[in-house]
Structure formats: structure tokens, C-alpha cells
Length: 165
Length: 124
Image (cartoon, rainbow over all chains, first blue to last red; front, side, top):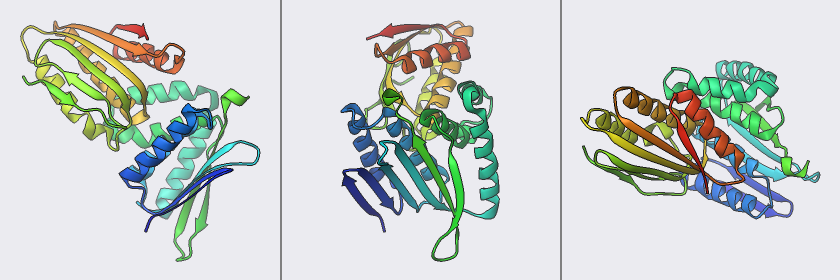
């Protein structure tokens, strides 16, 4: 079942369940409209698109997505999805590498896009690298356990509003 | 070959590709659920275009946002245009960007360099 809770002050969007296409488009439209009126950074909308598409393509289909504005004014996107041991190890290595790219990220993204490999093979890496570039802060991941004892990947990104810096 | 027309949606651009030579448009936002599936008909059109005898194409690209999966597909499209150009086709790419949006302008310059095909960067 999909559950959605929202609160405008401070803004919180919490989606629990399958992120189907109609929900994805609804949230994308809301965030883009908020960005257009200056209520949130445009990069928040773009990070949501990259993470949302990644979840749809590579996630388990269900999980938790939360977008919230911290009291400090910073924006945070958090996802929780079931993950197996092998996928966790691979993801941990991938995030460590992406976070370490830091200032060279734009060149790495460009090189990966240009790499002569099938388009589908690059999408997850490209998406996460773009999340790191757009957010302006490292991607944080951790492992948790859900109520049924399944391993859960928790991914959290703080989106820095460059216009406010 | 047939023309290709795809209507715009919230997550996909308006696409108008002519039946043979002519003026083409890709306009709007591009972050479809599966970019590789979405671009399939466009690549198919490109391959048909490359098999025409006399080929002349002005491609106008006016995107206000595209995600990374779509950027990979766009680069693949521009590389196919580069191939068509090497095969003798007359190709003109006009990359439209909103004045004050350096990200989209710079993306156009990067695509041009990476695909090896000159773009006209057109502010609006």
C-alpha cells in the first residue's frame, strides 16, 4: 500500500510504498513548482528525479522516500529500500568512490556518459554521480534492519541551496 | 521513411522529425521513466534518415531540463548525427537555451565537443 503524508511548515513529503509513475510525476511537478516560486532549490527537484528514477529502475519497488526541510533550512532526501548483502557491498564501494571524486565529478560524469557501453549499463552510476554533484554534499548510506528482519539500505542526501550561500 | 511525431508530456519532450530532409524539433523536458526505451523510435528514425540518398537536416533542440539517463541518449543521438555528417549528410544542430541558464548552454557546448559535431548555441 502506498501512503503519503505531507506537511507544509516545515515542508515534509513522506511516501511509503511503490513509487509508481503517476506518484513520481506528481511529486516531480510539486517540487518543480516549489522551485519555480523560490520555495526550494531547483537542485532539489533534480536530485529527486535522479534518485526517483534510480529507485524505479534498480530498487526493489517498495520502500520509503522522504523529503524534508530541516529547521536550519537545508533540504534532505532520504530513501530506505530492502537490499541483499552483495548489492550492499557493491553500493558501499560505489558511493565511496563517487564521494571521493568531489571536484572532479563533472569530468567523471562526462567521461562515463561518453563511454562506449550500452546506455542501460551506465544509468545507475550516472544518476548517483549527478545526485552527488547537484546536492553539493556527500551521499550518506547506512544499513538498517526492518521489522521483518530484512536488510535495508538507507541513503540520505542533503541538498545545499547554492542561491542561499 | 516516415515522419516521427511524439507529443509532449510532463516528462517527455515534443518530438517532430520530418519524413526525410527538413527541420526537426525536440522541445520541452526530458526525464522519462525509461530513457532508453523512449529514445528507441528516435534512433530508429535516425537510422532510416542515414539510409536516404539526399539528406539535409536542421535539428532544433530546446530542452529546459533532462536527467542523466536522457543525457546519455542525447549524446548517442548526436553521435549518430556525426556519423550521418561523415557519410555526406548536411547537418545543422541548433541548441536553444534560456538566457541565464548556463547549465543548459554548457551542456550544449559539451555535447557538441563530445559528439564531434558543431552546434549553433541559440539564446532565447
